[in-house]
Structures are given as C-alpha cells and as structure tokens.
Image (tube, rainbow, N blue to C red; front, top):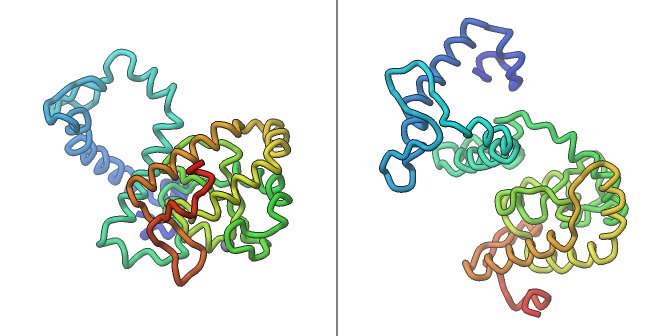
Length: 255
Ligand SMILES: [Zn+2]
C-alpha cells in the first residue's frame, strides 16, 4: 500500500484511497485472526491456554479475558516498543529481504514512521560532553546528529538518559543492535563519571528517567552476557565492523 499510494504516511495512505484502505484493513484482520491470534497464547507449550482472550474462529471479534484490557493499557508503551523492535529485527533478518535494505535505510522509521522528536531534545544536553563529535568515530557532528542507545534498546528496552550518546548517521546505522567494542565501554563509563551529574540535572528538567547507577549496572550486565556468549561487538572502523568480543580489553568489567 505504501508503494501504491507513494507515501510512508499511514494518514495520507488512508485518505488517498479509502476503498483500498478498508479492504486492506479487512485483509489484515483476517490474517491476524487466522494466524497470530490463533497461536499467540499457546506459543510456549503448544497447548491452548486462553489467558489473553477467548479464541473462536467463527466469531467476528476477539473477546479479551478479564483484566487483560487493563494490562494492555497499563503496559501499552513497552508492549508497543517491543513489538516494533522485534518485528523490525524479524523483517531485517529474513534473507529474502536483504537485497532491499541498503545501509542507509532506517527500517524502523520506514515501518512505523517513528518520531525521533522526543530524543532530539537530548542533543543539546549531550553535545558538549562529546565536544561536538561523534561518540564513536570522532567526526564532527553537524546536521547528521543521531541519538544512540549505547546499550542497544533490544537488549534493555527502557530509556535511561545516561545510556544515550550522540553519533553521526553512519555510525548509528551501522551499529544497529550490537554492543560497541570494548574501548567504548570504558569511554562511556568515563563520560558518565565526568558528566553524569550534569546530564542528570538537565535531563530531569525535561522529564527523562535518570539513574546513573542502574545504567551502569545494566551495561555491565550486557557486556558480561556478551562475553559469556562470545558475542560480536561493533567497531566504527569499516575494515572491522564486527568481531568477537575480547574480555581482556575490559579491565573495568573484570574488576
Ligand atoms: Zn561516527
């Protein structure tokens, strides 16, 4: 539909061809009913456990179990973000899709038309702590500033201000969901040691969650897990890009 209506905006697609929009919605609803809705509750043990909703293939609607609507509302933000994150990863990992994605497409932005506006506000807070340079490659940041989750969002899906660093587009896009190579872990700890208090003071005024201790515990945990699993880490050096993590380069972590 995006291709036919030549737009990535759902709002515009909806108004441009209302009939097409309605039939697409109907088709999507049918697909959801026949596939995910049928299997969603029994994913783990393959036995139907109706705890989210009553599934009746003949009915025209899905009826939520008591309390579920409350939980969906209460946790909608995190459910929403997790779904988007995992769906993006799923689409990206499918080998049939590989040829469509060049390095400069932001898939999540394309799929969900996400506004990065709320993170934009962090730029003014963080730019001085990095002397106006990309956290990873040190190139000067001009109009290409992006806010990167130092510990990737897919590993820990809660935004805490000390986890953010500023990067240029090419580093942010190439790092994706990988941990940055070891030296950046040290650099990030130093940044927070030096500027953590200022970041906290300024972030509070714009309503961001800050907890430096927790950010650091999470980063420690993420690198520890990476060592245990012998994960790959990302390097801004184009000739390296990805390589196995080397625990010897993480003295802080071992201490
Ligand atoms: Zn860079």
